[in-house]
Length: 571
Image (cartoon, rainbow, N blue to C red; front, top):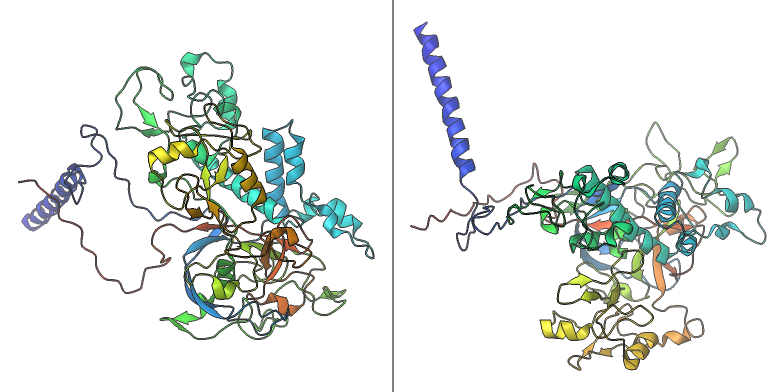
């Protein structure tokens, strides 16, 4: 009995000791390693140190651990006879990429959003429609696809086609806002549609206060505007789910808080809640993700190379259960788009559902065949030779957000609630005086915000021509190029179609399609098309930056131990 009592007393003491240790550790707030200032203390300025996170990918995406590879190294032949994929070792940062191509259903979601938010703006809806006429051919009967491919539910999980590069950019921008708005609604920080409907007609005493921007509630959510504090107020914020603001004191009703309530604030970038922007992958990212050499790598040694997203030199499955099946959707031979009726070889005559065929070692579907895919890059034959070795890319267009009120940092917005972008005016951060002066020049053809001078004739002419490789910074008189898509090309863009088919509107697409031969399935192959054109053989998928540490699965791998900084006691 005494022995049992002794054991019980010892266990109780250990539990109490552990609880005391936890309480004492919780009572010690984090402090600055360099100044000793205490974080997260409302009595000390309320400065918040946010928890360091490794965010999850956006909806529908998988993580791609970056690294080095030989761009163009998988090419087994020069199909175009242009020598345009010269081998070059490069490094790609870790990023997220869509598991599948963007489908018809995804695009119909986008069209529905436009119709719902701008029911009287048919121009916006029309501009977002894919060109279903890409199925037409003078000597083919493809009219049923013109009428049915996009909207019939039988094709809802097939890849969207007839989409231009410009339309893909607009989709990425919409997807960013739609995903972030959904995240904030699920966290209870923004009112849902049901909650907004319930608030309509209620007295102000039962609802948030008058909005900061009276027009904000009438426009759809925009991530940039939200982060800049211009998407706030009644009919938008949900104070019950917002974050407690330790940098403020309880006060009378304000923009987001009813009277006698604790101050709250919206999410900010430092919270790590919102997702970075969706975008098209760069050409290097796409090629790296398609090869998926991580599946063939052990201790930095690549055991086998690839010429397709799968291992081996053939295009048929070697596995016992699926032996002989075609591994991608492509044209096996001239006049053979799917094989013999009764035993189709790739189970598809045109496109196939976006989750058809086995994924590659990164978990990505249809990185060969089905549809070619737009990437972000502007095409040049010599890009592989000329681009940087780290995150190679050609096609930068540097822009600045136009300020509606520079003294308050308010952004100018267009009629859809999005920030207006102007060509960047300097290659580095301007002084505040230069920033104020730069706002005197607004982009031509757009409404000038109140208090901002109209654009000068010189600025308008310079923006319209866009043929010189360099423009003059009006503030300092130094050369600066805001648009470096061609980077130093001397060819005048007005000669497009006369002396060359390549200019700054030429965008790269990769991957091969349902109507291409097997040679185009190689990830290094590259072709181009004007950014305003589309095809029944070209679709796309989105990518997103992976912020933070590049290693995806650190467990089971050797690491150096990292010690925490010692707390400063000030004595």
